[in-house]
Image 1 (tube, one colour):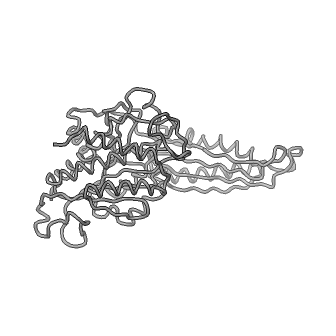
Image 2: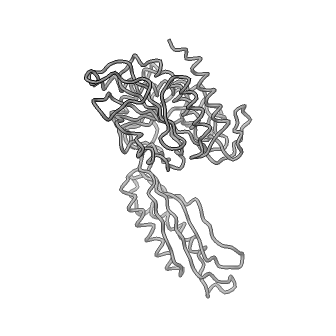
Image 3: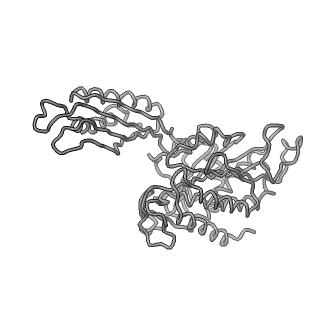
Length: 410
C-alpha cells in the first residue's frame, strides 16, 4: 500500500531542492545529478542521450503475449529493441530548465542564484516525474511493457528536442504524455483538450539600414528609427486585416533597437519578435507578409531591409484517443470527474515535437489554492504554486502509463 503522505513529502522536498538551485537551458548539470542520484536509489536504469538530459526505463514484470516468443525483459539494463518482438512503450516527459529572472519571494526555498528562477514550474514537473518513478517501480507486477521517463533540458529555448529525438529518445515509443502546472486553474482540477492545446510559434527579425543623417537636415538623409516605428504599427494589420478572425493568431514585437545619438538619424533599426498561431498553414503566409510589409515600409522611408524568418514550433496537438486514456487515468486518481474546460493557450511548448512523431497528450494541472501567492502567472518573478497539488500530478503520470499499457496489451 502506497503511503501517499510520505510520497507527497518526497515530491515537495525534491521540488524545493531544485527550486533553490535553478539552472538555465543547457546548463542543468546539478539538476541532472540530483535526478540520477534519485533514480539510482530506486534501482531504475538510466542514461544520458545528449549532455544534460536523463532517460530512464521501467520494465513491467507481467509477460505479454508478444514476449512469449523471446527472452524475459531485462529489468536492470535497457531493453534491446533491435531483435525480436517488443512490448508497448509509454514515454512520460518532464522539463527541467529555469528562466533568466530574479525571484521575488520570502520563502525558505527561494532561488539561491540571482538572475535565475524556476518561474514556469519545471522544478515541479521534474519532482512529480520522480514521484511517478517511485510509484511505477513499485507497480511493475501490474503491467507489461516499458515506461520511459524523459527528464528534458532546454524546453525554454526549444533547441534540444530534435537532438534528443535524433539520439533515439522516441525510438519504438507508442505514446507520449506530459503535464504542465497551471496557476489559472484551482488545485485539484485538470484540463485535457483534444486537438490543439498550445500554439505554434515562429520567430522573426527585421533589419532596416540607411546612410542616416543629421537631425538638423533630415531631408538629406533617411531615418530607420522612424521607418521602424511605422513598421511596428503596420505589422499589426497583418493580424487584423489579412488573417481570418476565426483563426487565432498574435504578432509580438519584443525588441526594437535603433539609434546611437540624440541628434543623428538612426542608420540601423532592428525589430525582433514572434508570431503565434494554431493553423500551421499560416506560417508560410506570415513569412510572405512580413517581407511584403517590410519592403514597402523601407521603400517609403528610403531604407534597405532584410527579413530573417525562423519557423520554431508547430502547435501542440493532442491525440483524441490519448485524451480519452488521460481522462480515464484522471478518474483513477481523483475518484471523481475533476475535469474542467479552458481555451487553448497561445503559449508554446516544444512537447509539440514529440506529438509530431508519436500520438500523445499534454494536460494542465491546476496549482492555485486561491491565494495571491499561488496565483501569479507563469514566467512571473513572484510565481509559486500550491505544492499539495503535486502528489496527484505524480499519480496522474503513473496512471496514464498504467492505463495505456493495460489498454494496449500485445
